Image 1 (cartoon, rainbow, N blue to C red):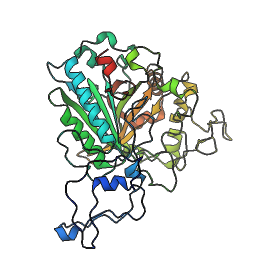
Image 2 (cartoon, helix red, strand yellow):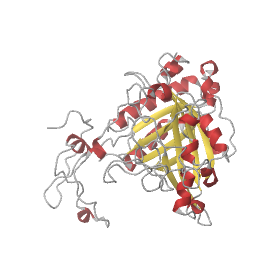
Image 3 (tube, helix red, strand yellow):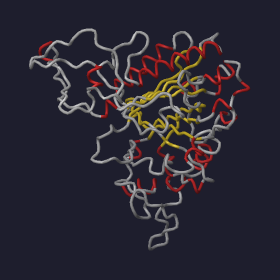
Image 4 (cartoon, helix red, strand yellow):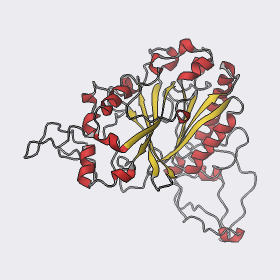
Length: 426
């Protein structure tokens, strides 16, 4: 009997033909409806239909595919969920002549599509069947508004003060064509096909109302790839995200989300996302010795423990010195500079993706971090920390900030609403 907690999807129109073993193929509905059942074999008799590539090894459906995030929640999905294996970021500008009416219709279409896809259902219009055989795979879709959106829609009076453009930083080498945008969409999933399916569906739904400004692709380690759950690593090989605020902390909501009574009212339970494409100068970084790399970060590379001792979660002792009186955690170490207690309590929830977009002509990798951080107010979250990093972070030598954006991400849509409805119809 199907698990009622797992979303059911469309019934395949035809009964799959039996394979050579006599077993019948698995439709998407059957796949989702039997999530967690032992011995469910995936794959088909590839040789019998002429495919040269062998099918993937048979394996049971696990929570990797069956896990589902909800669309109608207090805070939009894609903020507090764990890191996903695949991500797409895409920014749009409203088309010439499009305004508030067209934006409202677009957000309504996008919200309907996102809700269906996150439930493991096909897109409402012209579904491509890319994700036909998959479960929801923890798909999340998140929508935000850029500074320019409000002038384009005649809603300048509703633009939050917290959305004022970010100040310039000395490490910036920004490509304007890959920065900002009227509308921003974040897509994450634990399956690459599910993530691409959502990207393509939302791009098609934009129709003539909006045009793509820029698009970026990212990835993280797949769930279950390590022997036990652990903090992710970035492309420098460092454990990254140890001191992230956690939802269980009593002041988490206060630091990350706009309060229900906050201003403007349409941003209640929302958050602000800073998005930065940060290229890692990996050739230079990898020339450093292990000891030098650890001094730059302030933590051991093997397990993320602070250089002052202990394990990953041990509080860093910034005053501890070696026999010669030198600080064990150098004064310009990245982990020292970014500590909230050294930045007036500034806190942000970092939820990034790594990226690799090939190699330059000389073999230099175009790779790094799609940095995404969430906070109730970027002027109290991202800005003070980045200013301090600008003044002497040892890691800055090995990074290049190549694009940037700041987006107001409203709270989640109630049942029957679309994201941003309180702004666009308020």
